[in-house]
Length: 561
Ligand SMILES: Cc1cc2nc3c(=O)[nH]c(=O)nc-3n(C[C@H](O)[C@H](O)[C@H](O)COP(=O)(O)OP(=O)(O)OC[C@H]3O[C@@H](n4cnc5c(N)ncnc54)[C@H](O)[C@@H]3O)c2cc1C
Image (cartoon, rainbow, N blue to C red):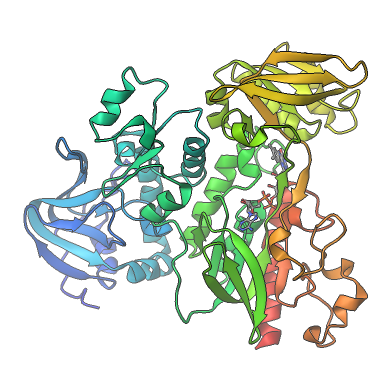
């Protein structure tokens, strides 16, 4: 530690009103000095570059630092920071690579705080941490909506499933990015040629350091530093599998209670809740809250408290080795841990129609958020299913300007949907309910354009226009990856504590003790949220279970050491 020499040059600077650019006081700079070292800088010095594997938290003591978006046609200055201000944005907390480059514009001195010391400062100096964290979050929002968003460009057609997958990943993980839709470009060839690309190369991801042709979510995530980085020789206290509401709650509680916590998700944070445009029954939000907002905040909270969230990281197996649990990832890597929280939730059932795969992501969707609604562009859409999620999706899509048909097998909505949703649907002239109806065929060229529906009582078939088919036809638990490692019920949901069969409890691994709440048939492996047999299948209950299970993790760790 070499921070002793810092002599803050402002005495005392005033706090800026702009939460994204606060000016630290001399007293705060003095406190920060203990975490880093002071360094003289000259004009043109690069403090970090966009795409660097990691970067330091830098505070300007004297001089000026500009943050620029590197561009072939000349760097674009996003912001300039003077004395008392600090450099960096939310990636300091999430562990992503920086999106922008920091360059000295006027010679002076800076305080450099390395990532580990930055984390230590954030947990030991709560007052400064609040100021810094508020600024980092505000800067991320500003970057996502402003000029900085051009640092990462996703280029493709809105009707291309791989392009849609990239956009969903970027949106779910609140990544800084912009979207270039080939369908809207006047001259696609010219646009792509200016970057040395051709239409056959799409979807393309362009970052300050790389151009990914036929980009996949995995490559994109790797490039931004979003995937799991193995830590050889390290055993986590707890690995949370799944970052829907249940897993996020576990990550927040695990990290806040000092457990080394890592969370893995096959897609990104949010889970099913992230697919909901409005959750109306979550306590404390009288006007409802978008699932993306709620889970996005939880993800940032978990990371601020020290949890690592990684995606896409599909977990494909679980085994016990030398008394530890070992999670196996789809890429073959393995993570040893002392406890596991299974929070893999459920996935919507796929429709049994020919050609489904061709249209998934190109007209067939399992979520109704802003992204899908925009692709459908206010045209005719179908929502399949008679549950609350289908009802919410229908109302949201109608609100976005689409004409919506809800197709259900039964002869009315009342057996599966809450009364308040039925009333709203009945009152909305843009929504029609088609009872005793099933979708039989999908048709379209590069994307869905029509569906054939059958009235199951009369046998009548009709082909009707449809730019989006939203499937909410019953969820199946995401437990295939567990194989027969833990006891499941007949429908594949994980059995826990009091619902475990006696045969599981007589396993010597339990050493005669009763299972802890949420514990599965393997001691130290817990299951929470929708994946668990008997859970309520609601956001609030998933959050409650995810939080409470951390108590059981503590009990397990205490008895197993
Ligand atoms: C459109 C819609 C609207 C809804 N509206 C409401 C509402 O208004 N109110 C309400 O209370 N509830 C609502 N729900 C239900 C609510 O969203 C769920 O009950 C809740 O999300 C369950 O949380 P969870 O964390 O248990 O699982 P999920 O949300 O299902 O999250 C599970 C996560 O695990 C990940 N995963 C799965 N398998 C793996 C694997 N092998 N490896 C790694 N990761 C994996 C998934 O990618 C996913 O992110 C709605 C659901 C939908 C779909």
